[in-house]
Image (cartoon, one colour):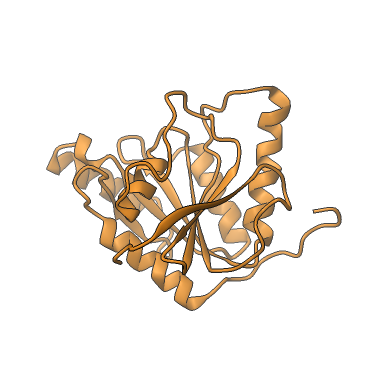
Length: 205
């Protein structure tokens, strides 16, 4: 996809604080240190659109980026190295889960993992959650450039063996651009298909 316009649209710090539903959305989920911001910046071809933090876990909001006025990439708060008051950390779960369950314009989720670490318990739980709510998901294995060619291929095979046949896997490097076209194909296919099933918001959400 040729990106001609990309801008920050909105942030949401609480369930129900998202912008009014509009263009189709694809969420980007993953640990705080797997390169989600680098993935977004590589996809749009702009270094500073999604800002990285020297301290993993600083992002406490859903961040909405509008691309070409036709699709939103939504950066979800990272997990694994979350910092901040305990009450804030507990609030992130409902924020993300409510969005994933009920957002009417959500078309799919990119689960970002470090190719060197693979899937861990949190990723397995998120994949099960998304399957239970019939949300399309693909796994993007980042930082392939930090592995040799043989090690990268081995890591991707190991990852693929643990995924359901319905979950695509894309190897990605923000440095070389490997996987960029494949990720955009997934995003655009999901957006063309439209949102999948979702739960109705609970009272008060």
